Length: 285
Image 1 (spheres, helix red, strand yellow):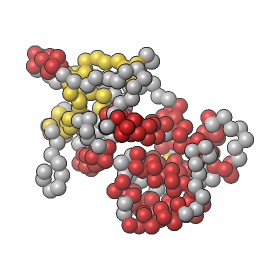
Image 2 (cartoon, one colour; image 1 turned 180 degrees about the horizontal axis):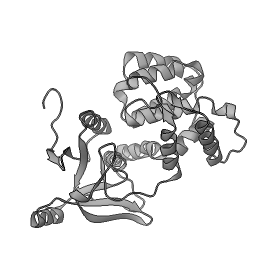
Image 3 (cartoon, one colour; image 1 turned 90 degrees about the vertical axis):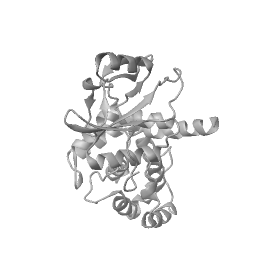
């Protein structure tokens, strides 16, 4: 430990860029993963999460929540080393990894050189680009239309109309989508760990502003749950946010069957899948 921060398992300059490698253990909890990712993001370090001798789950099985988090962090890739990759690395004098990803019929894997990895703007690596689902493509376009003052017209109207069509609810009135853009940007902020579509300086400020508007009180429960699943408990636990949450939660809340619930589940299915994963892991322990 130095200055209260945990030292990485491996730190190096690779290709002229600072790189840290963290060995991911099954017992590592999501909040710890998030804290380390945020810390290295602040330093502009590339971060590679690495497992040892990873064995993918059965076809219908789920990843442990700790592996699930780094899987999505690495663009739906999971990197591992084993006796074979260590031996090959020594033979050729270059780091060889085994990358795992999900194909149509289950898990696939292949060997890849460290020098062959692609790097996301987040500083995470991937070797095999996944085929984007509709929600992922939608959120890329939503982010592109979003600046420091929110998601602007006319792009916002076009995107919200597309979202309504995806919900197979042609009878959705534009008034029912009021504040949906702010909700989406709030959830993206929690996902990224920094404000999206806002001039706020940090997540605490953003949550206080978002939860301080009465028409948005109905979103409080879903925002709290989403924040927990993204490992943002520290922001949730601040006194100011707790006060805003208590006030907002006293109002009627939108449930999973509501329009809000359907929108959030459609846009962020992977995040809310963690609830089932965490429940399964808890029952198995």
